[in-house]
Length: 416
Image (cartoon, rainbow, N blue to C red; front, side, top):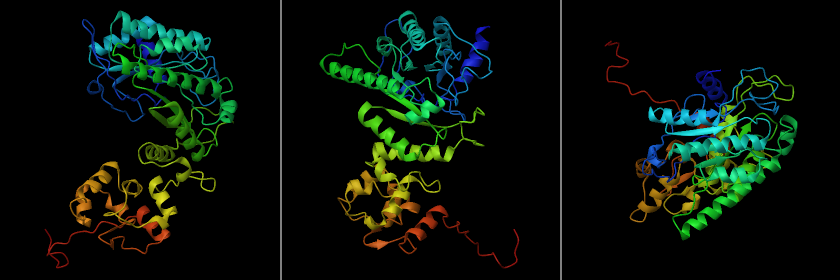
């Protein structure tokens, strides 16, 4: 099989992995080297199928010895198979970079033979790219949970970001759909990567000559909709990962029906709206001070698909509203639907000089079509509907139709 055919197979096989965005890192070019991984050198372009086009996104191999029911590369699936050599991946990366096709590499792999062998092949690849070709661009490598951690730790010295995909939110889901994977192996690898990142950060405070270890952090991916796990369980898992494993990002991937396995749900299309709600909630966990238990509970374990999570929370806690924007604390401002981090900071800064008007909020960037139902401004409520859950909910879900501006000739029988 020639290299072009391998590339076609293994780049197509990688498109289901969404956790390849980069946040850049500080790896600089060296004398005689090529590329750098400064934040400005990596753009974040996404195709419709979720592929990050600024990186060469490929699998090392799709010859998998595992038989995960939800995976297109499972061993029982009859698809074309291919495997690169480390040298082939290194040559592709450098040649694509020199042609300005890419700015970095995202490399993952199916499990070839066993975890240790696969991780060793990935390690050899990034070593060739870094040491032989002296490439200093961005590299995101998938760690193989269950592999000897010495191999993972060695690879971490050569890459900018590393991720270990949890895939399914519960151990029960893994046992049902991916019995050869263990959540303890995955979380164990993530924990040890997190510990090494902490050591690297501490050592770096003492000397700049510290050998980098995954300087752009680690991430993971969760598949949504392949198992009956509720949004609450998924969000609690994400919260735990951010808190205890210092993850940079958790990516959510709507399950794409690629198999007729009876253990999988019968879906006509990926649950993209649910995926979007989880991303919105994830944002609230990381930047707005919410907890998973606040956004959902055992009585409401899934997000309302018609409402964004913040509006949904506000309607369930209507006794806290309306809030007077000229007096309320910053932390509560962040909880008002339609007010983001930037607009909340602007409100706090501007109201030191004068009380803000409703018109001022528009200029600051507040999304008033949602915020108006949850605030007062100079003591006045601008919601224009009774302050009740069902009326506000109806307005948010079905906003008023736009009003057409009439001209002075409308209704008089004149035609343009």
